[in-house]
Amino acid sequence: MSLYDMYSFVRLLQLTPLFNPKLKITNYGDIMAQLTRWLASVILLSMSSIAPTQAGLLDWLFPDSTYAQTQHPIVMVPGAFAFDNTLGLIDYWHGITEELRDEGAEVYVVNLSSLAFHEQRGSELLADIEEIIAITGAQKVNLMAHSQGASASRYVAKHRPDLIASISCSNCMNEGTHFAGNFSEFIQSNSLLNLLTVSLLDNLFNFIEAGSAYPSDGDFNSEYRGTQSSEALLVAASLDDYDRFNALYPEAMPSVDCSQINNGINGHTGGGQELVNGVRYFSWGGNSTITNILDPLDITLIPIVGAFMPQDIIWDGLVPGCGQALGTLLRDDYPTNHYDAINQTAGITQLFVDVPSIFVTQANRLKNMGL
Image (tube, rainbow, N blue to C red; front, side, top):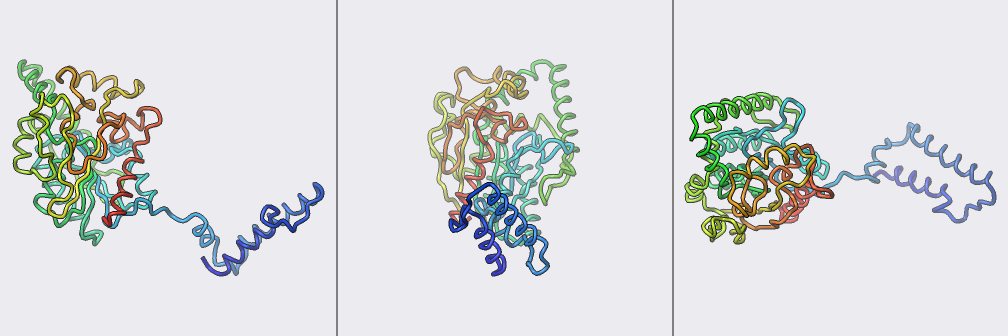
C-alpha cells in the first residue's frame, strides 16, 4: 500500500462521524451534508489521476487468502470412475478445487483411467506429475486422493518418493471392497448378464472419459486415457488383488490388517506410519451410507452396492471403513459417504456438512508443516 493510499484511507475515516467524534451532528441536514461530503471524497479519490489506483487500497483492505497456500503444488488424484470435468458440466471435485484456489492453493487436476488396474493408473499419474513439475518448476507435489486414487498415489510414492511431499486420502480404498468380488461372481454366473453389464459399464465410462478430454477445471489436465475395462476394475477393487498390491506397496499401511479381523466388519484398527521415505501420509473418512434422499447417487447406487456387501459392515456406500486408513488417521467418522467425500452429487450432502472445508483444512495443515 502506497503512502498516498494510506493518506486517502485515513482522510476518508476522518470524514466519517463514526471515526471522528469531533464532527458535530445536530440535525438531519448535518447528517446529509456529512454523507454527501464523504461520497464526494470517494468519487474524487476514485477519479483522481494522481492516485496510484484503487487496486492498491483494495488489496490492502482485502488481501488474497494464503490459508491453503502450500509450499508445493497440490495434485488432485481421482478414484475409479474418474474424470476431471465431464462434458463441461460436472467436476469430479465439485467445489473443492475452487475453494482450495480461493484460499491460496496452487491446484492441478489429473484425469486417470476410470476402469483400470492399480499399476496402470499409477504409471499414468507418475507421467502427469513429471509433466506438472516440468511446467511449474516445483520440486515436489502434494497429492490429495479419493478412493482408488490412493493406490495410484502409493504406486508413485514407492517408485519416485523424491517427487512427493505428501499423500492425503479422503475415503480411500486401501483394502478393496467386498462389492467387487461379490458383484463379479454374480454377473459371471449368467453369461448374458455378464455381457450386458460389462458392455454397459465400458461404453458408459468410455463416453465419460472422452467427455473429460478437454475439461475446464485446472491449468493442467491429463489427456484422454483410451479404452476402459470394467472387468479390470472389478479385479483391481477386490480384496484379493489389494492383498497382492499391499504386499508390494506396504508403505504407511496400518501394522494390523483390519480385513483379517471379523472380515473387516468392525472398521479401523488404527493408522500407519506417517513419514515413509520422506513422504508424509494422512487419511480421513466417513461412516455413513445414505446421507441425503435428494442425492440421486444415494437412492440409486448405494442400495445396489449394499446388496453385495456383508451384513452389519461399517462402510461408506462403497468402501468398508476398514481400509480407509493410511498413515496418520485424522478422522474416520465424518457423516459422509463415498460420494460426499468429493462433494457429489453437485454438493448434495448431509445438512451443514462442508466438504470443501475438509480439504482446505488439510491444505493448511500441510502448509504449517512446510509442505
